[in-house]
Image 1 (tube, rainbow, N blue to C red):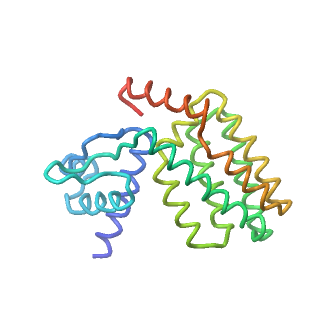
Image 2 (cartoon, rainbow, N blue to C red):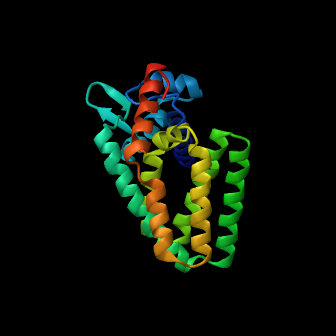
Length: 224
C-alpha cells in the first residue's frame, strides 16, 4: 500500500511536470491507458495520480469524458495572478521580519543560482531556480498555512509562470526584481518587500499582453 502511494505521488509529480513544461498542454485529453504505458505502470497508480492532480485544480475530471489538462480563461488567469501577488506580498512581509540568518543566506544562495541561469540564458534552469527562490520566501514567512496556500497556487500557475519567462527580457528583469527583494528582506523592510513582490507577480498592461501573445503563438505551434 505504501509503495502504491509513493508511486502515485511520483507519477503525479511527473505528470505535473509534463503539464508545466507544455508537453501536455491545456485541454489535452489524459488517457489512463496511454499514461500507464508511458510510465510502465498499471492504471491504478495513474488513476490515483490524476485524482491528486484534479484536487489541485491542475486537471479536470469530466463525467463520461475522462480527464483533461485544465484550461484557464484570460480573466481567470488575471484573477489568479492577483491573488498570487497578494500571497507573495504577505509571505515577503513576514519573511523580512522573521527569516533567520541561515534562511537569509539560503535565499542569497538561491539568488546567485538564478544569476548563473540568467547569465547562461537558460530559461528552463532559471525556472527551477526561481521556484526555489520563491519557496524560500514562503518558508521564511514562518506561517505554515500561508506558505502552503502560496505553494498550492504557485504550482497551479506553473505552466503560465514558466511561459512568461519566454517574453523578451523577462529573464533579466525578473532577476533584477529578485535583487531588490533580497535587499529589502536583508534590511528587514517588510512593507517594501511586500510591494516589490506584489509588483513582481502582478501581470497587467503590457506584461499581460505579452503573455497572452506568447500563449497564442504557442497554441499555434501545438505546444504551450
